[in-house]
Length: 397
Image (cartoon, rainbow, N blue to C red; front, side):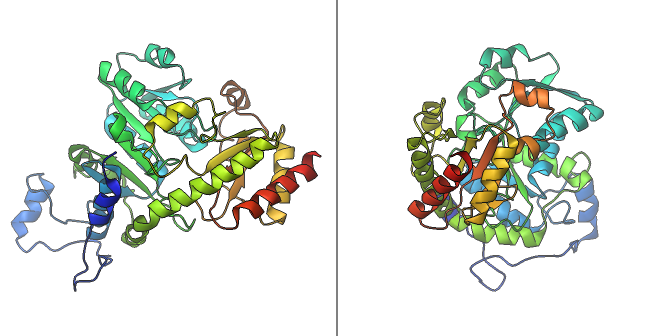
């Protein structure tokens, strides 16, 4: 692993008066001292100047440079949400219509975008079992442009073999796009052949469940294409990150490594305790996880296997009953999203994956009683495990 933590530390932008963090530049538009330069900018002849905040903003650029240093890509672009990052990336890569192949186990919002929105824009999508590499390759057509996957899938915690995906993409001249929201710092998809890496910054990057944001990481050429004044999807559809959000995230990136490590340590402690009591827990850090070795081989050292785990409660009613008990004893909060300092719990079949029809949920092995836990790092580990085990016993005997 390259020393991305040092790269992150060395990505420093100063304020106008020498402040240790950049200022928040909220200007919507910028002055051209030479009027001819504005014409040249709109004509695409002049690059790198500030024009309009939908095109570029100094504070958003500072955050983007810092995130690119963390992810190890040439460039990055902060946008308004994780879904905006996915939608803008795919529209930019498939501008005149075409075909995308994706792993089946993806976030419900991503599934709905792929199933219900992209086809209206002339982009067809084929869903394939992400673990079946031969099936992935068979699904590729002459008009296929993109291979899409999640490093660690939502909510089933399946692991994508990114090097194998990259090899398939390269054989067929495709772009590999990877949603890395569940695995910031754990895995750098670009190191394994991804062309574009996406994060929902709402989750671990924010860490406080208090903002919506996303980021796109790729080559400098691709990031520039997104804000081209004539053909850039971000420029022309407008989902740019707000400068105030960019400033908040810029500051929080410095302690992201500490938070990710703390999430992983708590999750591993809980998962081991659950497994020792015979609870059906899925966690990538357990040897019992079917793809434990695959993920371990992709991991950057020192950050563990992440903060996400699941337990199967049999039915959605039982999952919600357990979550209710856990909320009563202050183990966690019943809420969607993830990456918060406190544990968040949800039943994906009736919440974050409810966009996926029941028959397709069954096909991807998403059981109705799956309870997804985004493990926080607050609280004493043994005390939190005890609260979980007591609540499990109360619900299941």
